Image (tube, rainbow, N blue to C red; front, side):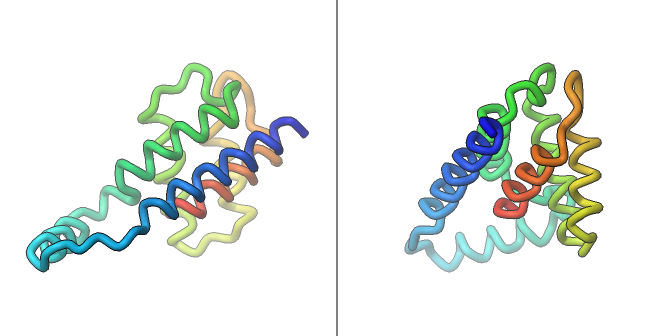
Length: 125
């Protein structure tokens, strides 16, 4: 139950971070077109660095045992691979099973933890 509460708290924090990032920036047309070009030129980066960083912080806070022994890049890969699965239209159960494999390390992720990670990742994709 404590993990569920931690996962919900992490999800709420993550959601708040996303909302603050959705402000109205009066950017120039050149800046907007250059960011569109950068986005379309790289399919290798599924999520941006800010979202990946927020996910890593939330993951480490909510699942310290799963994060033990993993560097930030490995945790970020959990997000990007999960986003690929979601965007590919895979069923939620299959994505959750894949998360269990990806997130497990020294400690295996429970189904409850994997579902919480799925919800966090779904908001970030």
